[in-house]
Length: 369
Image (cartoon, rainbow, N blue to C red; front, side, top):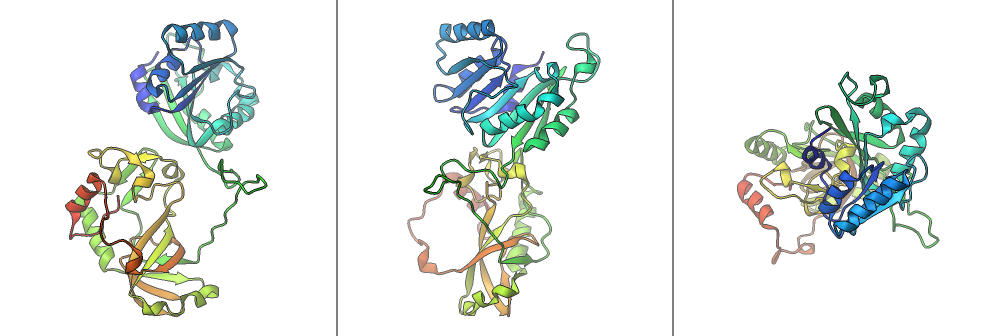
């Protein structure tokens, strides 16, 4: 029905991932996923029919695949998987056979429960058009129908992939303010909560970030030369940091410093950008993917960015600074004095790819990876 290479390219499974194949049938996808995630990964394969699960378990044994957990389970009921333990939930040509209106709350609520933070839900269904095979057109589900149902349960659509007769639609789990992060608990085991309030706001003429974070990764606006022109303009331009007037006293004495460290919230990073775990630095396909925390990009679970700026002057609760590469309207989280001796000056190592990026723009502006 569809090219498996296209399916797995879009799924973007990695070694060590955990995938949940819901309604696995004969297990072709489960077996392929097992080979990709390797011994350090896990494939949960669920189906309601005992004989189907027994056949899949035998296939796995005969091929020496020890990472497949074949389980008899009705996917419309509680899933036999731990909370926040799955990277990808996968449902192929199953939903059209269910009464989605009746079971969507329980089904997608369970999917959300078992998915990790930033985990994905991938669904394959037949296109809602006349074809010589497949279910009657009245039973088929369009991507629009699925999206309107699923986004209500804490998901955001990431991608829609054309598979020929079928399509695959991919969603990401959105972290809500009520979600607890596993392991972040107080001594009495209640979830650790954080409240972050802005202390001010940035005012300048920068309308859009030059590095865009989205579900597909990072993308630079324009070519490198245009980006460097933007960087030079930012270095020379004066931005205002307007501190909440009720907090103006926090600035007393700041005029004695030449440079400040500004922490601000990249408020234009969309939810899908906050779900990324690996990216090509600067959106450059010629640089291998690395983890988000190995970059300075705005795409991160909490888009907190830092910049060292030169302080021009203070006007009561307003700081005029140069070199602030933030977008107009960005909330300011904190400001600290830049004290040179607090930062190592020698023996600082960076990856080869970062050194290469810096070499490309050295003398032309600051490069954010």
